[in-house]
Length: 232
Image (tube, rainbow, N blue to C red):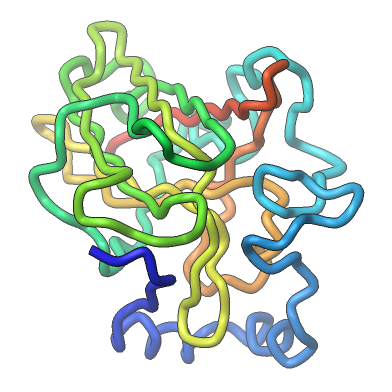
């Protein structure tokens, strides 16, 4: 277990080199986002170091709207999959709160539902497995990992922190939370959730627009987000 900033596997680096021309153009011009662990300039979101979005994300202290851009249920479409990445570990602990004593970072509460195709049926008893980097962008074998069983009404609630950025080859990946969703009679969903306004979203070769979540702010400085998973 190491706190050093990790790099992804050779295969993921090869996939990165096959990124879109937009990604290469952005890298050539130099990333405009604030690097991780550097205080964000005035006007930026201090949770991610990203420029504050001008549209989409809610900035009120309340919960985000039920259906928002970036939530698959806005059009009730099956949730897009995304790469697993090199840091998945099976048999994560059963827990909904990934934050342990002494851990740093901006607190994040993520809520949502797990639904079947058409959004007319909640998938009670589905298993949602989360893993992510810590606030500095490092992965650990036994930290920031946990699975939970969806409630009878189809809801889940995760307590964690905004993950940090880390290098993918020569480029930082945007902040993201990995997730696997499993329910009887449905294919296993492996995906990632991203945050609106992150400076690396536009040049990341793996991101999908439907997986970007707006953030809302609470009075204590914590963040809130919502995402409903729709399984095929």
